[in-house]
Length: 263
Image (tube, rainbow, N blue to C red; front, side, top):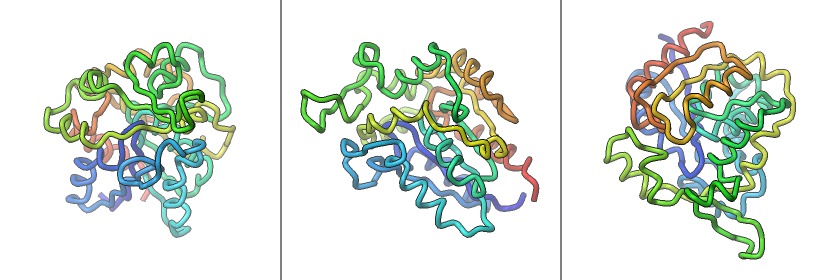
């Protein structure tokens, strides 16, 4: 197989670190892998409470794509609400993306209305429905307690069940030392990305997670029906974090999807 360049986009609270198994497997087999830290995530030094919008949050991804040579394209791979960041990047840099892979990720066609049931689930996943998210999310108030929250972080007692219920204990332990609050304002825009016809020309692949306790499989199916991808794969024994629970299977799916691209 020819060499491909995979660029990974993490979900809420995570960072580029969560893709370490996939990146290692790809590099060991002659591919390139870049794991982006969005603003305020991973080792990015920005205080997540100061992130003002989805575009602000996505700036490191936009900066990376903007500096790619005109003759180079990458395969974007996103997880969870990172799907919104990836879709936004596809709208801005369609000529730089050869393939988009959504792993248990938000995949919403830009400029379309979303059914209320699915919209509510996506809001719960990103901490935007207060009465529901108070159960599993902690909030930070960077602008003072009298103002809306600026950051969210899953309560420790829910992390294992919602993120990593099928993942190895050592990866769960690692994650609990690295998770950071995620910027609330970044997620307000993930369901309101403006229409961009060029994104329809980019082939999309969806990877479903069969034992996902955060984004349940039945709701993944509802989302898929609204914007059907070119290919769909199922990881039947994966929790929400396939990069930990079924990394080798996910790696094989990535290669299989990449093989469909023209040389």
